Image (cartoon, rainbow, N blue to C red; front, side, top):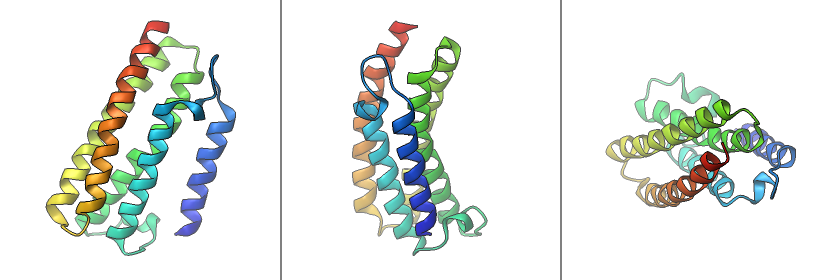
Length: 152
């Protein structure tokens, strides 16, 4: 399980070193930093809920909380690469579609938090923190998306 986490961290590091904007590198963007924080919190929440079960096994589990945890982790993992895609793409259609998918993923993350809370009381502290980070991310994402739309 640790190998998967290290692989995802390496992927995030590669993304941050590969893409840069005209003004700053992607990893300096507040919205990107918040996406990384959301992924880290999601990973810790999934680790708590799955009792260190293999991440690859979550989607095949019969337990509903494991599958929701898998969806949560997948959605949070996709935020940072989509932000990098928006910043690095010259195609306005790709940029707008990526912005839309980031917005949808944020909504899904909120929904997954609600589903986990209704099924598991022990994760309340992590869920509160994750929801707070999602709220901050939505504000940052809204300002950032406005800037990106102006550039299109």
